[in-house]
Image 1 (tube, rainbow, N blue to C red):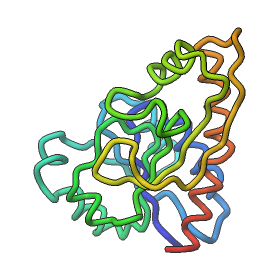
Image 2 (image 1 turned 60 degrees about the horizontal axis):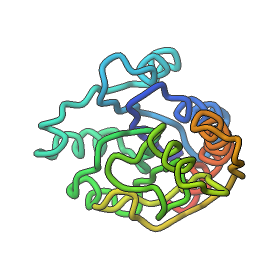
Image 3 (image 1 turned 45 degrees about the horizontal axis):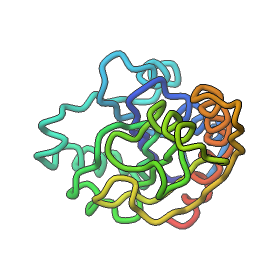
Image 4 (image 1 turned 180 degrees about the vertical axis):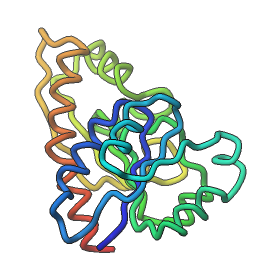
Length: 189
């Protein structure tokens, strides 16, 4: 049984879908929720699901090995970024090579990079007149949205779409595919 740590900054809908998907799995379980935002919905999910959670401190996250040690003590096999809005520091990437994944709400390399998250991505997609959008699940390296792609899934963007309607289409893809890919990756660890 593999241990997963989910890093999230917001409501936690992807975290909940992963928890639900793995509830009866023999491959792995979510054993830690890591959050950087007091009061985030994902912390309530952790409490309701009986999953330990930790609220991280920015200085320690970026300038120490404190959280690497925590992840190792918890015997974490895979780190899953599910709407986590801080860049992962190089020391954490190096401590978990090819064992940190992220989901991005666009078809990378388009609409990626610093500041491109959530509503900002969907707004940019609509303003650019894109005919499609989607999700990219990828490994995390030292650069924003730059790691090797694991999966891309697409949805149609029509001229009538707004950032909100694109967001709903993209979130449906996230909820469908992210839990499946997380479970699939556990087999190779």
